[in-house]
Length: 571
Image (cartoon, rainbow, N blue to C red):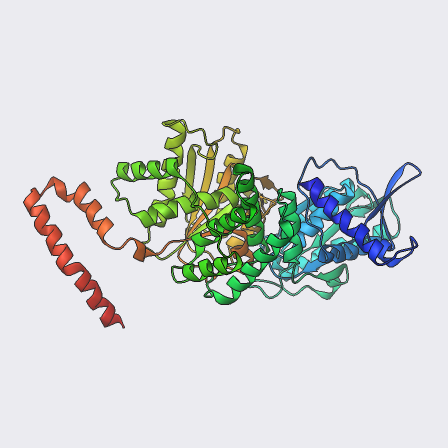
């Protein structure tokens, strides 16, 4: 996939050079490309007037970013900033590729890039340790959500970065930093990304602004990104399908109801393309348009309200007229869900069983998943049933499907404890580090031996911009929890982060775009399943069958009438 992504970009460059009739290596169309050359046994990277040394950092077979004109502009800004010994500051809304563009340029330059998620708890000593490591190793760092750091700390960071910049300008091999002599490798770089206008953000002080070249990243080229990713996933009709897909998302964002948990941005598009690639490999005989429709439907329907479902189906019918889509079969999982519900003394309600399957599908393509809905909808039960079904399919029924594994859950309420108790904090006087609850759980999961077991960390409590923003680098492609003491916990594919929330009214778009959504409405259950389970597990011990029948009759006669009366009084 990485090779195809790069080859498509190279093909587009050659076409552009041909179409603009480039005659000389001094033409700007050629100069603006990221170019490699070997001179005097050195690999040099050039772009416009900037020149960098290749880093030779082994990255492994990692995926590469789809390179669009917006990516090229970002790269020109970053390499130009490095040329004049400054950093770069991509700014813009969530999901526009700020961090990923910086990381991908580091891959292209063979330089190790460390992504750090900034928070209000960060203080200048931690940043001094980070910068000391960067200047000595020649690595890059991308400081995500940089403007969340307190203004007092930003002023000290500005002085630290100024010392590094002056040493680079003077061409020093070593310099005095933080009262210690440090070796300086000139290719080191510090970059910051910012979401302007979100809650809890600070305006950068002027002495810090001058150390970064700004680049605005607003609207990504959805069509080109979708087309190249579909090519890389093995689709031959990528151009036509990408056009329809982007149009569907555009129409959905305009015509469906406005909900806090809806997101039709770049991360949502990417998750659909990943799901489409998985389906393409699982069912190679299916037509490509059917594969894409199934992926779009399976990744979007779980989050829609009941009123939006018919409209979304109508949009798909308009864009793909006359196409019959076969339903996805989950026979093995469906049977086990029914058995799990019975073993828990719960009733089998078709709508809830469907939500369990939708949650299973969403967990296969998203690292972070939010189960959203008012109290009484069965959010906790949905999680428990899926965990039980997956565990039993692996343990008792020896399922051949690798997606079914034993599940271990750890549940915590993030709002019941302070931020320091959640992520860890340093004691003000002794500088002693005390671990947080979330960091301890995730570290234990990350260190677990790869046995195939699924580890779920469930945050059961309200989501707000105060605590959830620290999870941003966990929920995106970095999958890394950044702690205030400088520790970075790299999470594995066996781990999933789940949230049980009533609504996302206080969450920022940055958080919403990073998570898959499953919306659960209480009206799907009604009161009857609760009543039936109560009769089975409790009342059947004390009442005779004729008394049970009499009790059922009373409930059927009066409960619906009582609810209707209460609704009218409330109105």
